[in-house]
Image (cartoon, rainbow, N blue to C red):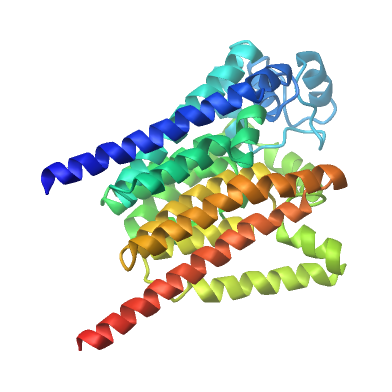
Amino acid sequence: MKDEGLRSDRAADVAYFACVLGGIAFLVLFGAFAQRSALVHSNDFSGIWSGGRAIALGSDPYDRTSFPALAERLGTQLPDSGVYGYPAWVALAMVPLAWLPLEVASWSWTIATWLLALVATRAALRAFLPRSPLAHALTGLAATISTPAYHQFVLGQWGFALLAALFAGTIAIRNGHALRGAAALLALLAKPQLFLAAPIALLATRRVALYWFAGAAAIALLSTLAMPWWWSAWLSAVPAGRLAQPATLYSLLRDLLGGAGIAVAVALAAVGVLLVLPLPRGSDAWRAGWLSLSLAFAPYEWAYDHYLLLAPLVIAAAAVTKRSERAAIVVLGVGTGVLLFLSPVLYAVAIARSRETFSAIAPLLIFALIVGALWWARAAGDRAEVSAA
């Protein structure tokens, strides 16, 4: 049995790394590396880096009278709101990279965070879905060649770092390491709007919640002490301009139904909460349900943020596999299929419309898939208990 288990583990690792290497070859052949080099001065990372660079130069990234001109001189993405688009703790965290030339900082960021994501994903697969080569292969493909993965790479966005944090934090908490898990999950503060419901899933125990909120408060306090004015400048300039064209259900239904669409989206979010609430607290099902809900109903996100759906998909498959390994593969197969095949179609529609709202369909479908599978597994468990009695 031990030898058979080792062979299964090796087969799973081979499947994962073969798909990852194949994905990297795909990115090279389809020009991702060349495109990223061409966009290094205008992609999202250049805008993220510019806040740290402004601080390093003694300038204020939240001064709308000076920051746009500085960004233009630096040759980076121009701020669409007139000020730095991220919270002050992000700008401060970028200061070490800001001392490097943009090209060096950009490639260092993407390669380092991408490797972290791939290593963390492998660790998650071994923790949640061991000895399943097909699960490892599907996830490896989605982690490298899905449309969200492609755009994460080209744009230098946060997805790789955040996926690594999600998996590292979840594994640590699952293994009883509250402080380590909470520390990893502090990375979610980089894009807090994506994780409004996630703390319910990830901070289910009092110790984890205490550590996380203490860390978050410390980060907010230190950034405020460093730049006391940033809150008012950021709040007055950024949030209002973030709701016009994102890939959210609210924008999609507003396009389709007018003003009533937002109310319908809020009602659907409430239904989602009611569907997730009965899941066993602190379980893999609980984590997957709340994480997928958070990403499906985020108030501001773009299609590249859908890369993070890999976390609830893997965790949900782990919850379902306790009832049926075949059902777990179906969940993971359909979910990664959405990212691999539906996402590029939705992105083509976005290009044609110059608007990404229809991309909101992808996380909504994955949320429905995950919740449906979790409820099925729960019902199957109830039936098994009745039969045993």
